[in-house]
Image (spheres, rainbow, N blue to C red):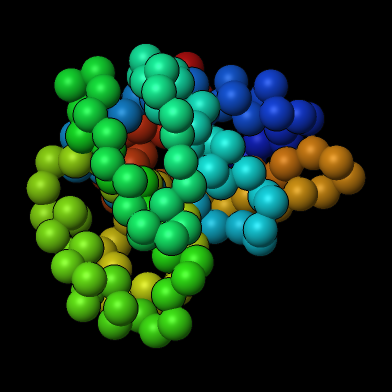
Length: 152
């Protein structure tokens, strides 16, 4: 299942993030791809706000991961932009987060290559004519169930 969205501005990106927050379930792996400035962190911030997170949402580009507990969910927000080779995320022990019931939100998953587990949902974002073009693809049954709820 695939969805395509045209998000005209930050308010539309925020609304999409909040809608996505409503369909999250423990154990989901969501990978976000797109060039710098495409809105990946903005989307994660909106998702967290949609779950009720009121504190600061930091980009994990230097720490590699930021952890959140909100609405009875554990969220692990990763940013692999600064990885030089795929093995670095394993060497850092980050693979352990993917074995649990937490929701893994991964920016720049391509930097970890084939070593990452299969995602449930892949979100590709790009800026086009001042808006964001977003493609959301379900890669698993759990991902398909979330996208089906998102459409309604």
